[in-house]
Image 1 (tube, rainbow, N blue to C red):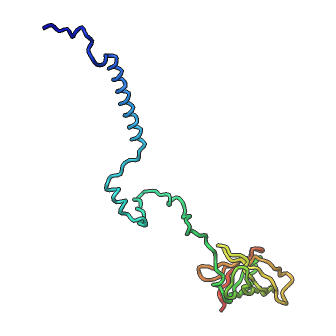
Image 2 (cartoon, one colour):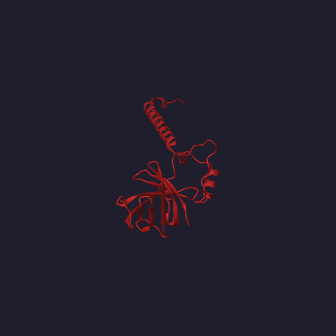
Length: 199
């Protein structure tokens, strides 16, 4: 029996069509590989299942893990500036209520000073009296300002018999020492001294 099919074209795609399909398939595979690589590089690293489970079990208010030896943290470099960080309010003259006496050095001369602070002394309020006998000078004091380095008092309403040299105004600064005394500075003259409780 003779084969006559050789004279007829075979069904299906031509070699050129197969080449085009192959090129499209190669391009599609390349695009998938490129997209997958880019996605893989940008996605966060997966956490091990144990780490995810541990994070889920940790309460929200649990303390943070502490860094190991030699580790540096931001808190090591910066001071605490949280909502609870407050500046030093300075001395509390209300705790100094009572009578004080001592001396101060001014112009090479040691002079006596006496101070009485009333209970409840507060900024802007009358707080007692001050007396410097050698002038003589005696007047009422009020709390002018409170700073970390001391409490500044203002003097006014001088008693009869006070010298004309007694001038009203602020500048009498006191601060408590570790020994429980009051260190004294007159900002207008540079005089310094120490007072101890007299009562």
